[in-house]
Figure 1 (spheres, rainbow, N blue to C red):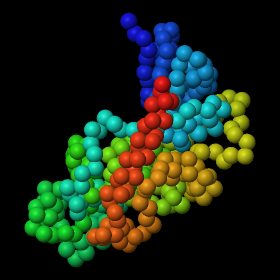
Figure 2: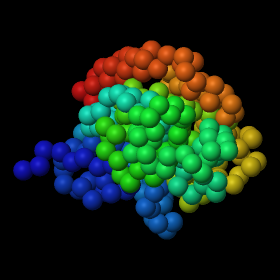
Figure 3: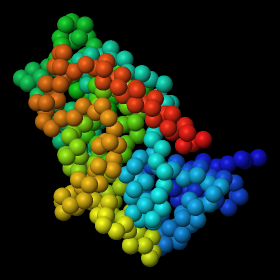
Figure 4: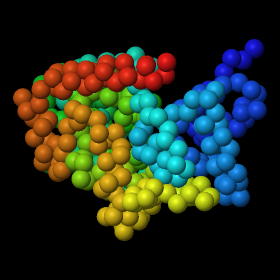
Length: 300
């Protein structure tokens, strides 16, 4: 006997259980039109609205950009319940005090971790540690120079290992990333580009794919609001809609972020005594607890 169904992404999969006369909880994280064929788009908008308006169902988004994008496309205001990442069971414990995690796009042309190590190691770049084990050995020998490791270099490292880095440098490549909420839930200090630079980073993921940039038939969007449709190489949209819509992301809204504009600022903040890591982490955990109470009330 099934009491209710839970569905997530792509949201169109919720239709598989819509006819079983049971409540549906949908926790959405990707574009509404993901997985929808062009010739089924209009029908899907009708079906989605019927499911979302059904008082027996509950639809929510894990990030504010998606919620606002859906409202622009359909006129429906879907509540936002932040992702907490409690399943990581990891807490910030920076035993790797001179190692920094780097989260960046998988298709980026120039590797940020490589460039950051160039700045950090200078002429000794080719003699730097090439693995976290080598970096651990170097630290044990008293070598205290920061080494940057890309998340993709760690081969699916468990969450406790991620929590052992001094901090994370994140170059967000979509309007929301699960890894952001997971690291934030650990209380891991996160370096992000300054808010005014976010438009040049975040519009490179699924939400920027033109296949998902359509409105419900007969709906004209929200008056006075620029479309949230910013293509990956849409330079015109970067300058026009990018700044306002990047402000709809948690990369812009979450408190206690460590913002930087240039590598020099980043390295300065990493210097001994420059940042109170414990205070930053404690403030993040305070925000986690506050929003967990709010999220619990929303789910209830």
